[in-house]
Length: 344
Image 1 (cartoon, helix red, strand yellow):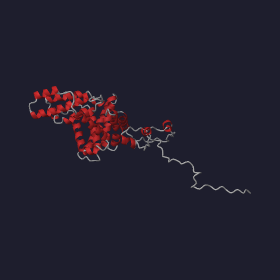
Image 2: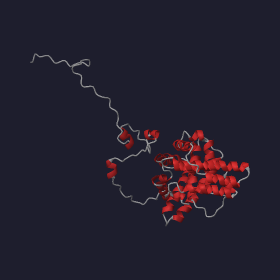
Image 3: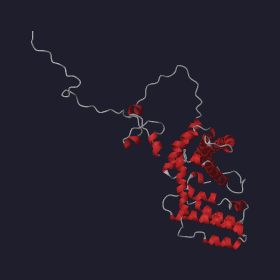
Image 4: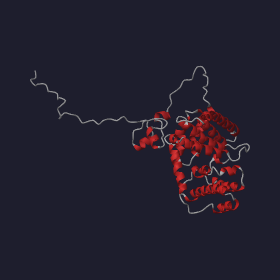
């Protein structure tokens, strides 16, 4: 029998036998987006755009894990044929076209393009007339590059647009904080539709997009407080910055000859004042195009329609002097980046 006594185990307070201190383990995000991984922050994995990317206005891309991308589980064939679900394959095609192609033609700014691809699409998914507006614009875009299906797609675009208009018209005069974002999305998409849709006959005093731009601007003024804190905040903030460029004094007086022409032909002082305001706004538009560096934006040119709203009355009356002024504006249309919806 051994006479040695059993070894006493160290108590929890004995320091010499304490193991190394373990670091607090944070749960890793293995399915996070590539942007968060690149920035070395934990991704919340929200779909289709995570909270970090949405807050910072960055692109959000997910990649499938390796085993998901390269392998699929075998699926046994059903014994009896099942009824095909009503998926609306054309609608799916149009939505796919919008999210992969059309969105990139609506702006030359990458941040605004991503806004159309992600946040505005997600907004419109909750509103039938806004979604129909997306499908109508996508159908016109697809028809522009598909000769065989052009007639069919344009007819479908008209059908979707008319359906959207009939639904939205009930909300236009009764907008509120809940539907303001949807109505604004619908109004912008309708402007693009109007540009792209060549009318079969001339049924107005001037192009319908002129009226639509004025209406969209009026609605934006009424619902400004709601729109500035919603989906369109980035778009409106950029528009404000572009409008501020018009307030500077430019080196060249681009409208000097046009101003002399109006002074010689317009004798009524009140009418002449309206012409001068329109010509001044047009001169500022030319200044932005020719003297401000960087890419040009749609706001740079079409904002003149808003500033010259009183002058457009003379265009509607087909005054010769008004048509001459308007021709100076039309020259700038060719300065914009070529897009399918401007070809009409």
